[in-house]
Image (cartoon, rainbow, N blue to C red; front, top):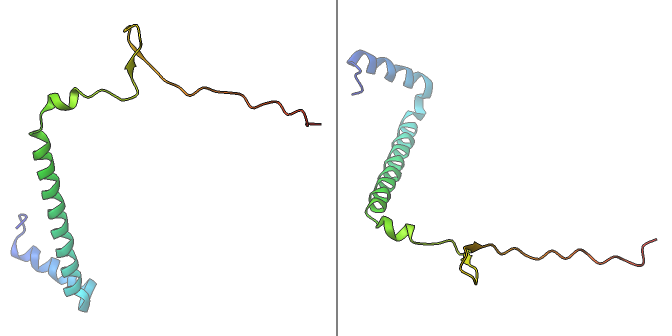
Length: 94
């Protein structure tokens, strides 16, 4: 177990009892639950990465961004920007 001998395990257990005392069972339970959740998340992430590696790479590269399109002459992509109209000058300002 992690390269620890029986003496090291006893010392770690004694320190844990001194630090946590009566709360040691609930601390152990919460640590166990945290490790379980971490393993679940790791397994889920590993499964998602495995699924994504099996997807067709050509299908994702053939998509084009929606903001770029060819102009009427076919010369290349054009960009669309909103038109800026300056605010009207106020005649009431003093």
